[in-house]
Image 1 (tube, rainbow, N blue to C red):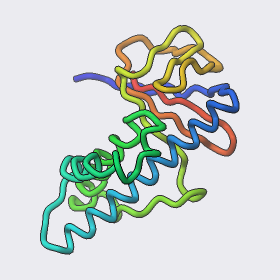
Image 2: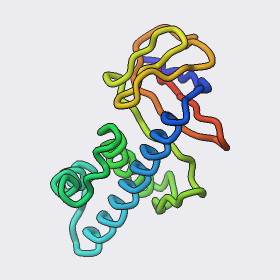
Image 3: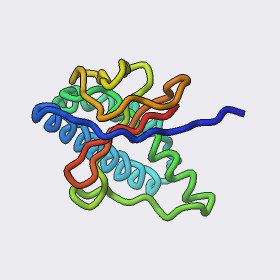
Image 4: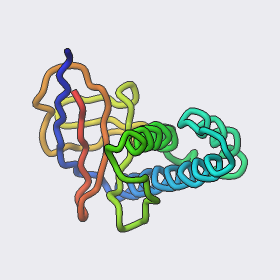
Length: 163
């Protein structure tokens, strides 16, 4: 059995990096809301939607209809489908409430970065499309990085690294 540890580290982003983080979090929130609405519509019409099906539909239309989604890295538009799939799985098993729309200012701003898209060097993490971002401390766990979530609490951006 593999143990997964997480280390939440405060970031010191530049103003341009803060703006990118806000756009990435907004794109993630938009994608979740689009996927939830599409899931509900398909479910009402008798289909049994999945996260992968909705992701294929979204990918087919967002190149032409939503070109602004390409301003952030692809994980911001890919991960919400897996998260929604898991949210519905938990709902149908009675472990969680029905998934809700995410409202700006009422839900935490965050986005996911896959392990193959980031690089750590001491107190610096290099993220896709934004480059190196200073961290306030180095990662204290050894092992393979499985992924990361960049999130905002109040006005502080953090990165949570899963090892």
